[in-house]
Every structure is written in C-alpha cells, then in structure tokens.
Amino acid sequence: MSTAAAEGGTPADGAENAYRPSARRLAREAHRRRRSRRSALIAAVSTAVTALALYLLVVNSPGWQRTRETFFNAAYARQALPEVLRGLRINLELMTVCGALILVLGLVLALLRTLRGPVFLPVRLLVTAYVDFFLGLPMIICLLVMITGVPALRLTGVTTDPLLLGGAALVLTYSAYVSEVFRAGIQSVHPSQRAAARSLGLTGAQTMRHVVLPQAVRRVVPPLLNNLVSLQKDTGLVSIGGVIDAVYAAKIITAQTFNYTPYLVSALVFIVLTVPLTRFTDWVTARTDGRRQQGGAV
Amino acid sequence: MTTASASRTAGRASTAALLLAAAVLTACAPQDAGTSGTAAASGAAPSTAADCAKGALATHTAGTLTIGTDKPAYAPWFSDDKPSNGQGFESAVAYAVADRLGYPKDKVGWTVSPFDKAFAPGAKDFDFDINQVSINDDRRKSVDFSSGYYAVRQAVVALKGSKAASAKSLADLKGVKLGAQVGSTSLAAVTGQIKPSVQPAVFDSNDLAKTALKNGQIDALVLDLPTAFYVTGAEVTDARVVGQLQNTGGATEQFGLVLDKGSALTGCVTRAVDALRADGTLARLEKQWLSDAVAAPVLS
Image 1: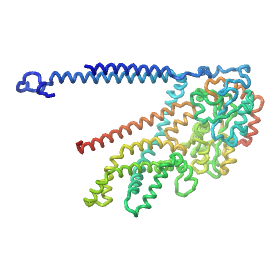
Image 2: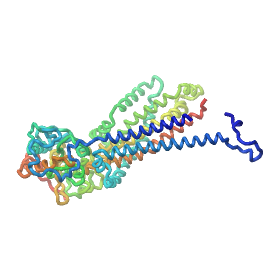
Image 3: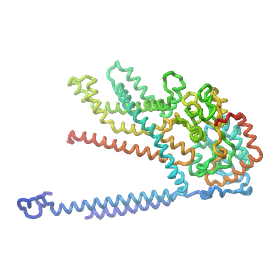
Image 4: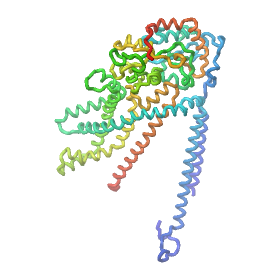
C-alpha cells in the first residue's frame, strides 16, 4: 500500500512535518502486539499444564515416596557434593589436556590422510588403518587394555599411572573421531578453491595452510565441540583404573549407603558444565552462518 | 476477521486437547500391583512360626525361592561362578536358609543381580540376595536385611617384598597407595581406620583391583579376610596377607541377606538365619568353606 495515500492530517511545514504514523499503521501495530501477547499467554498456559501433568504423573505414582527418599535426599546430596567436586578436578584436567592433544593429533592425522601423490600411499594406508581400528574399538576396552595391559608389560620408563594411561586411551580413540571430522571439513572445500590458489602460484602446502584449512576448520567447529562435550563425559571412564572422578565419587557413596542421590548430584554438575559449552557451540555456529551470509544473499 | 476467530477456536481446541492429555497421563499412572506391602514397616514382618508356612511363602515366583547374587560370583563364597552348585560358603548358606524355609534344592532358583541393582528401588526379581553385603544403618533405609550370617574382618594384602608387606601397624600403611573395591566395607576401613596420606584407588571389581596390585599400580589391597586368603592362596601367589584390621566400635560387622524394603519374607528369613546360627550350621559351613581364614596378625 502507498504511504502517501494513508498519510493522515494536512501537510504542514517545519516540525509539523515530522513523521506521524497513520491510524491504519497504529491499528496494525496494536493488533500485532495483541497477537503476540496472546500467543505468549497460550504458550505459558500450555507449558504450565504440561509441567503440572508431568508433576502429577510422577508424584502420584505408587513408588514416588520411596523414589523420593532414594533419589532426592538433601542430606546425602550435601554429603556428596564436596566429594563430587573433588572428583571433578580429574574430569576437568583430563578434558583440557586430552582435548588439546586430541585436536592436534586429529588434525595431523587428517592432513596425513589427505596428502596427495602416489608416494604417500603407505602413509595414507597407515592412517586409514589407525582410524578404522580406533573408530571401531569400544572405548571401555581401549581403556582396559591401556590401564591394565600396558603396566603388565613391565616396560622400564613407561608409566603405570592409571590417570596418564587412561588419558592416553582417550587421546587414541578420540583423535580418530576428530580426524574424521577434520577430513570431512577438508574434503568439503570446493576443488575450485584449491585450483585458484595453485594458479596464483601457492605451493600445495601453502594452499592447504592459507586457503583450505581456514575454511575447513570453520565448517567443522560444531561437530568438534560435540566431540568435546562427549569427551567431557567419557573422562569418567578412566575410573576403571581406580581413579576417583566425579561420577565415581558419587558411586562410592551410593554403594556405601544404598542411596542414589549422589549420582543425581554428579549428573547435575555435569549438565551445568555442558550447558555453557553447547550454548557456545550455538553461538559459534550462528556467527559463522552470519559471516557466510555476508557474501551477500543474491 | 475470520482468521482471528478461526485461530481462537483452534487455540481452544488445542488447550482442551492438552488438558485431556494431562488427565489421561495422570490417570495412566502405573498402579501398584499390591503384592508386597510397600507401606509395611520392616518391623511389621511376621514373627511367629505360623506365619512362615514351610514352602508356601509369598515368594516372587510361586512355589520356588528365587535367590539373587552378582556375576561373577567369587570364591571362596561361591565356586566356579555357579551359585547353584551348593559349593562355596554363601551358596551353602543360601541352600541352608532355603531348606529352613521349606524349599528343597530343586525348588530354589538363582538370578543374576548386580550389586548396584540389588538395592535400587522398585520391584526386585529375587526373594533375597546373598552377595557379601554388609549391614549398616544407611543401607537399612533402602533395603531389608536378615540377621547377620557371617562376621566380617578386613585384611590387608600386599606383594611379597614390597614396603607394605612388612607393615606391623596401621601407621606403617599411612604412606602406602591402597586399593579397595567400591561399595565394600573394605573401603570404609581404608578411609576410616588407616586414613592414608595418598588417595586410595577404588575399583569396580576385585578382578580390577587384583590386576592393579599385580601391576604395581597400588601397593596394598584391602579385602575381607576370606577373600584375602583366597587371593593370596590361589590368584596372586606372590602376595601375602599382611594382617587384619580391628573392628572399630563395639559391634562386629556382619554380612546379611538383602530383601526388598518391607518384604513379607524378612521376618521368616531372619528366623531361618537365627535358627541356623543357633544349631551350629553357620559355624560348620564357615569351617568347611572358609577354614583357610586362619588368624592373621592384627594391625592396630
């Protein structure tokens, strides 16, 4: 519709000439406000009804009384929290150190696997075999073999510390996952990019370093962060070597008291840890999407 | 405006649908089967012999007594990982209790019940569980226990020739890397009595703990005395029992049979265990299966 036709009032000069929204526009805005208020109200009511239904379902179940005592006991929660937090240090240490190593090793593996040229065939074969093996190997078996098998070899100079060995097992397995993510990113960069770079006179290595990798890494940030969150939870598996992490600290109290509240406490701690990570992932994704749009949506 | 009224009706319809769904959901809450008196306090169990009709108790499966234990079932409590062969102390005790309750060997079934699951709330798939579970007050809030069928003592095992193997007192064990199994009272003994300066290692199973001891990842392992003698005698032969820990406090620690909280059988099972203790059966079985557990020096 044309604004001129809808312009109400007589055109005056000076300050009188300021923009005044037309009656029709005001009506339209008011209507929109009403609509959005209404939908907010409906959403709130529907959420409340759903929450109430779930609450009633749980509270009216015949076993609720015992479940509450067994899973939601404040006294045991208070007893468990300091122990769980003490154990959490192990998880965080493993996550940061192993996370850094995994990123580096994963990238190196991906680069080796995408090397071109017939002379590199053995390298590609070796990396492919490594990745296939560790992708398929169940994490828990990898940990068991590292933690209990390596010390049994009685090698001088090799550590028997279950924490270090468990960390090594995490790095071995996860670098295989991460290398596949990186490789997917590298292969998703259009060949024309590589061709253009080479025709500008960049060497193969320079092309990879300045043209392909920056695009590839940006594309795979979300799946990488998924792997990081998954690693954060898997750090707890190192406890099969006797190391007491957050979940295991909870398990010790649970086994001693036959009350499951400590498990819930450790679960909450992990969720609290994961939420910022996933939000960060969303933010990074949104940012890269935004940047891609700046090329100009045609 | 037709669209507005249309959407209003749609809104009403969806609200109604939600409310209906909520009503259905709450109505569909699972009803208690009412077989076991969940509300019954553990003290309200039958106490007279008349209530414990031989072979006709309100068992999980009518006519048979279902007994749970973990897998693998370790010696010397069981033998060859077969709880049903009557070999090993706990297998023998289980059959003796079943016999007292009026269930002969062919009327006894075994089920695998992992330690963690044995005390989870909800319906149990066993009538009682026998798995070297120590009785304590915390645990009584979640499960019922029979009276104790074995008095437990904790022992320390170390590789021969190691620093821990020559320990003469608790103080000698303070700087040692100790290991214990999760949920065992051995772990409570480590943290409560020895109070080591190095954080102890805690293992999911005795197998992992034994492997860690062999690998030198821990210096010493705390186990109950019969297991300690079995481990040093048959499994880790280059280890020895360093000594046993004293019982703290007045009461000795006891293994008890685990029953569902408020189980109708608790009273009968307890009476059966008491009777076996009174007539010397428990002592006899202990001698038969745990006789290797000779006195080890007491570390104080």
